[in-house]
Length: 204
Image (cartoon, rainbow, N blue to C red; front, side, top):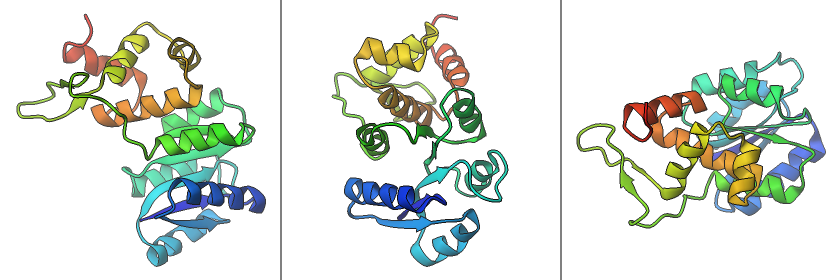
C-alpha cells in the first residue's frame, strides 16, 4: 500500500511527502507532479492507501481530478489540499467525493493532525459502543462521540460550532465526521440525519 501526493509545487509536494513519512513510516510515499502520472505510479508502487491532491493542477478542470480518482478508487480516502479558502470550494470538493479539504495556509500541526486522524482508529470502550440496527446480525457500532455528533448535526451546528463545543480543532471535527460517514455508508450530513431517523437515533 502506498500514499500518493499529487501537487505541481515541488516544495509543498516534498513537505507533504515528509509529513506523511513521519505519520506512516511503514508506508511508501509517492510524490507526483501531474495527475497523468498516477496510473503508471500505482502500477509500479502498489495500490493506494491515501491520495493527497492539490485542487489546482495543470490541465485539470475544476474537481474532475477528484471525480476521476474516486471513480477508480471509491474506498480510498482522498484529501484535497488547496491554497483556496474553505467554504464554497470545500463544499464543492466534498460533493465531488473528497473526504477532507485542508487549506495550505494552515499551520503544519493542524495539517498533521488532520492527516493523522485518517489513520487512527477512534478510541472507544465497550460501554460507549452500541449496536447499530442496520440489519439482522450487523456488527456495526457507533461510539459515544459518533452518537454525540449525530445529535449536533441534528441541531444544525457547523463544524466550527461543533469544534467549539467539544474543545477540539475544526479539522478534528472533519475527521470525526469522515469516520461517521464511512461507518454509516453515507456521504453527507443530510444522509446521516436521514439514516439516524430511519434507525431510531432521532425523532422523526
